Length: 267
Image: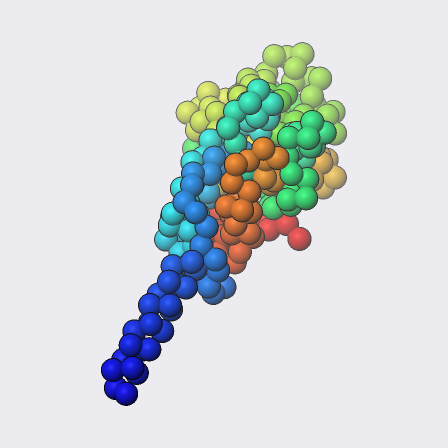
């Protein structure tokens, strides 16, 4: 009898271990484990710091066997790369425009699309603020000889143009050739940090990451809402793993990292 009980106990333990192998922990409890893979995530440059930090949490607490490989650049550049066939499983844009364009081409899984985050634009200056700039109104004065902005296919550049047009400064700054353009928000941030311009317009999160002084925020209603949509690509080879990552991006663990950087979690 004892031998039979012992055998049954061993069988029960083996069954339990086998069951555990098909599950892993996440922030909310046990979930089914998925086959290992590498997810290619294309994300707006302004998410570099937050997603790099979240990668550690993902592999430590959520999915140790699903590797994340990030490509950070302007949303316009990433959109073009996706259109040209680049391998991408998840796309996170800094504006709706680029995601809408991919949606119209049938390149994303529209059902997976979510508005993930919100951000804000900030007028920033280099250390010490040599030009003494304190407001957007100063951009139309002799205080400014050069302002750094994102170019026309970069979301932060598009928001900047909207702001400056709203304030009747866009044509004036262009005519005076006072604008130096960058190919993504990190380039703009670097230009200001290295005093290649008297000021610049970047996201609040990038200003904080670079330690730049924010001297002003744009008037309310002067630009489109800054929303970061995320979606799974329609042709991904790993839809379940990509969906798991999308769910992770909406957990409290991810929210804590995003909010600490200055993002607002979209409702």
